[in-house]
Image 1 (cartoon, rainbow, N blue to C red):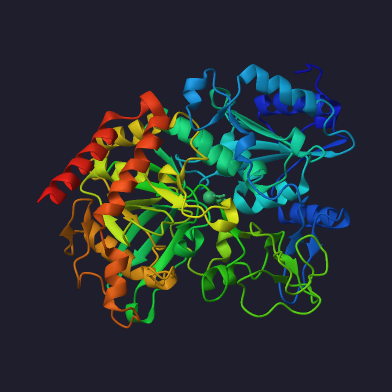
Image 2 (image 1 turned 180 degrees about the vertical axis):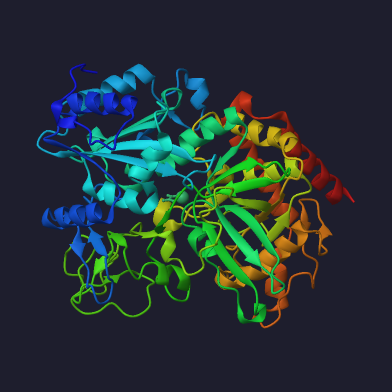
Length: 600
Ligand code: OXD
Ligand code: MN
């Protein structure tokens, strides 16, 4: 990088870290912004930046009576989602990134992106955003500095992380912070790359302002780099929600659960128990990411590194997620939702009809009956976790919470029963490693295709997936009191293609069985593929489900499992030589057990 620090980057007196000042000066010399703004995270700063964003048309104020402190952002229509094909792990060797990641050599990536970053912030403000992933002062937390040319990113980072001076206070004089450099440039998909350099604790992201590509603390640091560091430091960085279940007697149990995107993670994290479960409460610790370490008591302890929710808007309603609807009542940034004439938000699946005169996510009058959606299917809300009425008291606890159960879940129309408990840790890792989700007709043009998404980490594992499985297997030896591992499937369908299980709040019934099993309080039945609830183990009282439906939702169909196991082989082959023998053996043992059972 150029070595003459720009006078533009002069740091305020509260910035004392020399390594940081030098790096910011280098980046300013490269990107040549008109101005450098060091973010202190104050309310005053938030108000000023919000005014700037409104003046620049980046944010549209919503009706202050209906949504106080809330704004709508319309992104460039070419920039509405994560771009897996443009996301790279830039480790020194391709093998370190493994067969499921895109790889670019570090030098090549740096020089390719540097060309675009050279003068890339001319005439613009360069924001320096210090942030902490994890509770302030927690030994589990990590500190990052994101440099960005997007005020939208700054305001989102302020919600999603602990941002500002507090992060620098925690950093002190240490030089080892994550260096994140982000520039939207001209938002051209031809010049869009999200590059991770784990060996340098560095992320460079250009050409996109979208959350997962641009809020570098989330998928880039907390998951891709997080997972890379976790394997070296003996912990787990996972794409998991964390929730607490409290019984009427006041007993609290915490579980972590991995689901691929768009499988109801935020809804599960904020579940409201049905009436039959009066006295039971579910509290949210996190809705997307869990960092888990072995505690001195031998249990696995988890923190949520985030401070807010970047949730999918469509489908969110008072029926599907009343707590999310409360969370987004104020101080929320909405991205790519529809705008009603009284300046409120609207999306498909929200309560109530779309008012006349609503504008779609691109600001065009919405023509009712049009084949297109009014809100983009991946439209989002960014809201502070402090708004969540069911936020756990421990969401900000530097120690985190002890995890008693880990749940893996996918979207599967067949084969996978409503709930399954693994026989042991290795078998649980096998369940997680083979989990998948079926593509929908809308997304892929072809239904029923299982996309393997092991532990919901396929797009987020920052190194070789086979080594990631090996790390999970090895962790068993590090955790004296390991959580029990489960698999769930809320999405199984009957012969008439309708869902067999109602989901949402009713998932409490499954959650209770999981918690009871984890604590050794209830029965179950052993099958070839794992433990399932016996008839009567799952409390179905007050619920409208026929016993045929329930039996179909929980059935183990050996024919379906045979084709499932064939599909798993393809995925194992793709992973290649790093695929752990212990997991290959699990599959082979299951084939042998099914064959033996059928031979009778
Ligand atoms: C995701 C997200 O895409 O959390 O998984 O945004
Ligand atoms: Mn996610």
